[in-house]
Image (cartoon, rainbow, N blue to C red):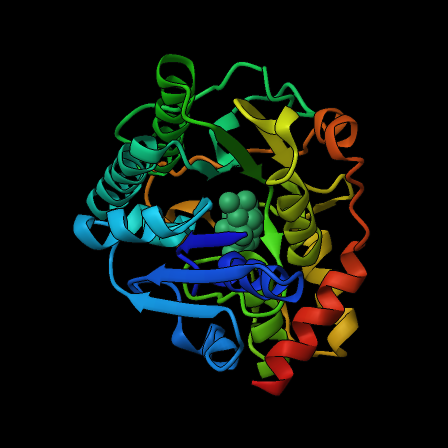
Length: 320
Ligand code: UDP
């Protein structure tokens, strides 16, 4: 198959490119390198079946042509990372809403399958864990910029599902739960690359809030495996699907594990949320997926435990 990946030079997109090439698909990456990096795809440039354009999805004439040439589109181009989102809410909303709008509009002309990357962030402040795809989304108030990201992604989901319902454009929505692994940068706030870098540098490991908040981290290799299976699964069309892992860890516990794994002497420092992000910042206490749907659909089971994820990230950052 010919696959177009918007945001393909990003962390997840570049791993997906690699997996698709290995399975003998053709891959075209469209990426404006806003948060992605050319380094992520440099090793793919000479691979047969791989092509790319450094441009934005807002370049609609290019986008339309690339969609015409593809059988499937993975739409991953988006503003991501809590730090970036809080600092640049205008950019976040415009990129996430408009980008998806143009991708769906052009894909609809030729009815090309679009896989839309969404996020567990859409469950917002819900405490109804584990999160099921049909559960209520609980957003915070609009002056708190974090929720702009969740809402922008929720609009993407609404729009994609509307295209499916009203115009029979095949779409699949995947909600990622804290995907991590080699190539993820800590630059936009993601916790694991930040902790590992801090631990290796002997700097304080900065735990935001009191560290009791929990996450379940998913190895990017598990995510990519799920994506390649879902794109070939007719039952996934028109569906919202969680892609995650069920091993939970508190952020303080995570800091301790990173410290032990790296043999670091870094102190663990608690930083209040308003200092880390902005005044009145709201975090979610737990974020855990219900994986019943994806298990039933493609027999997905996460295979990488947290220690294996951390080992891969440590190795990647050590070699940088
Ligand atoms: N976090 C932290 N220190 C950091 C970066 C993040 O304690 O240097 C916390 C953050 O407040 C959140 C969790 O780690 O509770 C996961 O953060 P991340 O930005 O990776 O993903 P999120 O789950 O917030 O989307």
